[in-house]
Amino acid sequence: MDKTGGTGGQLILGICGSLSARSINKGLLQAATSVLPDAVSFEWGDIASLPHFDPDLQESEGDPPSVTVLKHQIERCTAILIAAPEYNFGIPGVLKNAIDWASRPAPSVLERKAVGIVSASPALPGGVRGQLQLRQNLLYTNTYVLPQPQFAVGLSRNKFNPDGSVHDEKTLRKLADYMQTLIAWAGVVAQVGIWPGTKPDERHVF
Ligand SMILES: Cc1cc2nc3c(=O)[nH]c(=O)nc-3n(C[C@H](O)[C@H](O)[C@H](O)COP(=O)(O)O)c2cc1C
Image 1 (tube, rainbow, N blue to C red):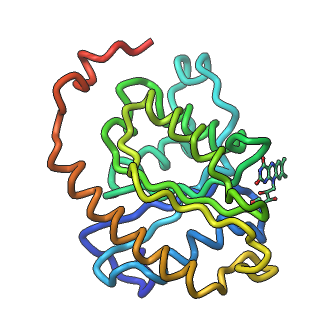
Image 2 (image 1 turned 135 degrees about the vertical axis):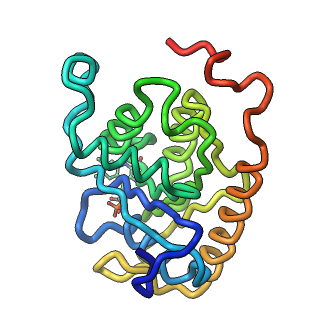
Image 3 (image 1 turned 60 degrees about the vertical axis):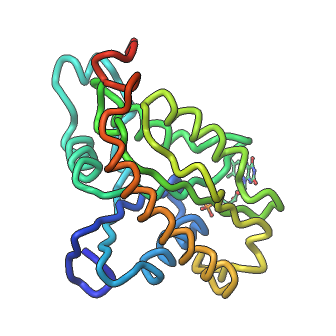
């Protein structure tokens, strides 16, 4: 569903790595919905309800319903926008857990999916170390993360309201540019098809 309640041809799936109600990273995703071109829809992915990843459970019972929903959302979307808080120089466990579920069985719904990563933090670097870890995870899954620009909002206390929403105009403008670039990137990814050397059946998947 897009910001106007309609549906467009292109769809961004927003996944937030924070479970906090006043999350500034959720605030970034919320802001993204307001700067998207009208023809582009936005949908929220729910990762809070996923159980801990358990390969034995997946093998014996298949995916839990919450995982199935998320996988369908990933399959359907044009691009995923992940807002990732930095926890201890890495990504929150709940986000890694979602990636682990989505990545199996391989080749997975994450294969050759266009992804944008954004983050916000009260610290100056804005969560870039967490972003790097996320890129590392998505390298294994052969997911096509937008290489540049990086979008990391530091010193969030000057740019976000106490409820997590963004009020800084420059951040909103940069986010609008970022979303345009992500949509263009999804177009590039769609053109690439199966790139030599990245065919799922030719990749070594453990
Ligand atoms: C467990 C934990 C670890 C954190 N580690 C980092 C960190 O490594 N780098 C950083 O910039 N901020 C760190 N922070 C601060 C978060 O960036 C800050 O709480 C931010 O608001 C979290 O994002 P959210 O508001 O979207 O939940 C940490 C916070 C928590 C709770």
